[in-house]
Length: 81
Image 1 (cartoon, rainbow, N blue to C red):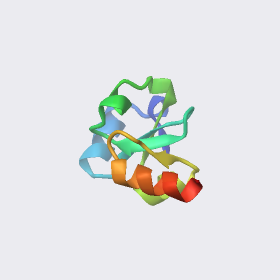
Image 2 (cartoon, rainbow, N blue to C red; image 1 turned 45 degrees about the vertical axis):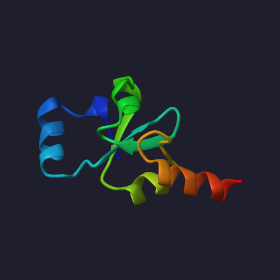
Image 3 (tube, rainbow, N blue to C red; image 1 turned 180 degrees about the vertical axis):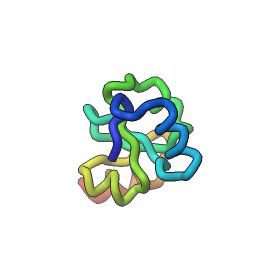
């Protein structure tokens, strides 16, 4: 997991290009989603974290976004009820 504020623009672009960053999350809300998510794009930089994959996000205690990852969110929600 990488915090957005700890990465320089150059390092961030390199990680994106090399597909080392595939998902983004909100550290305050503990939600992760796709980089293309409209909700995630509105997130403040100081709350944004990046993940290599879903397994890493889940291991850190994050849940799927209900907007960009509807099926994963539904599966998570059904499992928590």
